[in-house]
Amino acid sequence: ETGLMLSLLGGVFLGWSLGANDAANAFGSAVSSKMLRFWTAAALAAIFVLLGAVLEGRAGIDTLQGLTHLTLKKATVASVAAALTVTVMTSFGLPVSTSQAVVGAILGIGFLNQQLDLTGLSKVVACWIGTPVGGLIIAIIVYKLLSAVFNRMNIDLFRTDILIRFLLIMAGSYAAYALGANNVANVTAVFVGAGQISVFAATLIGGLSIALGILTFSRPVMETIGKKLVRLDPFSALVVVLAEAITVHFFTFVGVPVSTSQAVIGAVLGVGIVKGANTVRRRTLTNILFGWFLTPAVACFIAIVLYVVVNLRYLPEF
Image (cartoon, rainbow, N blue to C red; front, side):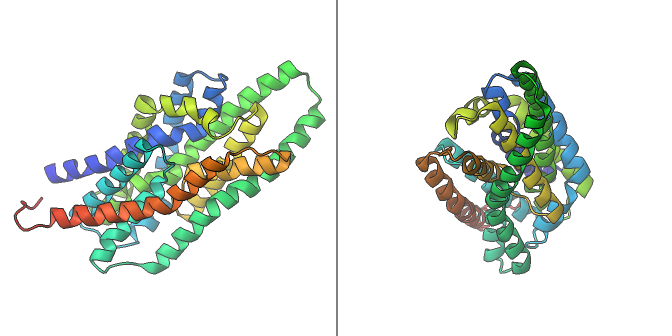
């Protein structure tokens, strides 16, 4: 029991860092544009992340645990390796996908033990490519639909502002729900795969740890996200959050955890295409692409190193 509790801490650490990083994709634009106070956003995000995890987290867990056969020791190494990857890359200021870090770590261990299910892997990689592309396409559709609706309504600026604020809160809550539903698998799927906890326990523990990350450490990321990547007007911000939420929720049904950050980037590019504006800085895009290829590779490497170290003969078994 103690072994399991200690091992789960690796997953909780990962969930915490995921919440701290990714809540900004749901509420960052509302908070950085001062439309919503940080604590209101954090409370809403924490509640909806937990709801999403518990109600719809199962499909992603089924996919990830099917990638390779894991014991408790392997599961622990995988989650610690993924958490370290996320922490290291975040400290270098590189955008990082927790989903890619987890899969990279699982692959490293599967590779060492020659137990890889490549059919599951091709589905996962296809969805990684589909995430920014999906965000881009959905953002273009959402932008055109919403602007048509807004033009029809013919309301004054003051009322438009109130309506957009309300919709941003709704879209942010939906995005937090989609984040929980889609990404909880990253946090605890390995422990379900190792036969240590039930799917319900996994969604609950995972959801709570992501919520904890949001409440304790998401403020700096939330306050900078709106400024770093792009300057969005409130309407465009609404389109981006909504498109990201729909994209991530779609992949939840497919059963593959994807990166909310990559969905946001796709959506921002989509808005840029519609407006004919250069919304994203070149350098930011290069960094993102770099992180996209680097994340699974780094996680895979760290997992292999950790696994080898843990299995050295003179270390006590745990």
